[in-house]
Length: 166
Image 1 (cartoon, rainbow, N blue to C red):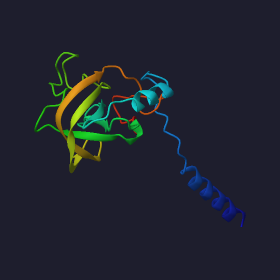
Image 2: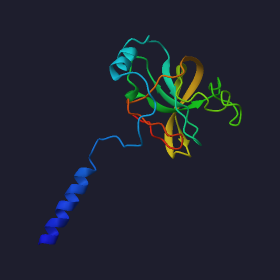
Image 3: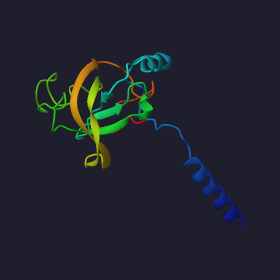
């Protein structure tokens, strides 16, 4: 009887513990940036239009481009996206072994204004084992080269694994 009660309590504890909503701790915050209120005000004052705000997010050996959101929306609504470059090449579509300021993913964490549209297709990204939305890029404009954290002030970037997500 005692063993059965102990197992029941242990099972209930494990189940309830798995329901937590805490973000995983990948490491200390290392992206810098504004205070949350300042970020919120910046997003709320963005010009709206027929474009997206994009943040380049590179993890080694992956082929997604980064996160896209509509102007005025928080980053928590952004989608990790793969670019279809049939109309225009992505800004960082360069050799992987070029100079540090002119190679693939040199623009990690840069913020862009992005024109184009989602194709409705889903693309498999094998190195991260994810199915991601495809976006047909038409044009882009660099907005910021050092915008700081993406989703939370305590964001931790690791170039070897996906650590930034809404």
